[in-house]
Length: 239
Image 1 (tube, rainbow, N blue to C red):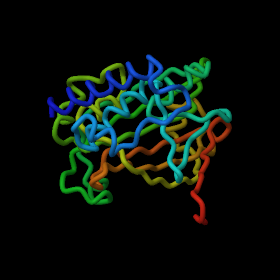
Image 2: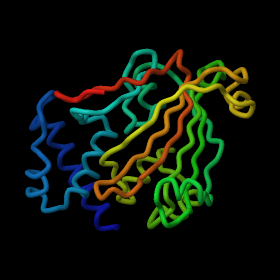
Image 3: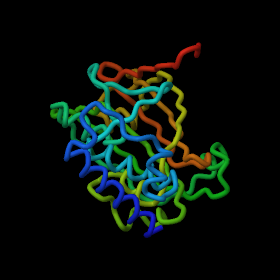
């Protein structure tokens, strides 16, 4: 794993330098994955790690033909950057409060996801506006395997779980989600500084690697006055 981390950072540095030097101009497309893996002599997984690093640095963005994205006050959010950072770059200041960051055992979730191990890293966070009112409550669960085991004791690099996943070689290739609306229970309302029963969007998502393994499961409660979920489909796809 250390070799892979070194390789993807090296590739990211090379491509970043080329982008900044104008080799890949604004609005142009990078060469395809096959061409880049051949050029650097690496696997697709390592290349995707490098591309995610470039995405976090704001140097590239990727768009799938089919997918979904979240907006805050009508502005799209890039979840690869983390919503707080994405909003800050748009001029909206949110504070993030970590409620829980520890390794837990959740047999029910493991069974739901079809995992043999019930060990997860639990990261619960609330995001607030300047006045203290919460606009989102997020519960993230990551299988505590490989280099991710013991992550809460080591801490997060810059507060970013996504960076930790990339460094461990856990690259999201696909995701699926379910959206519903429900009222806040008393505990959720207290954390968000809201009224019990207030309606919030509930977004439950599972992110998977290219081999189908689970990278992360996230359940988010979102203020419907501020967040919207947009769904787009490729040609020929119908609901």
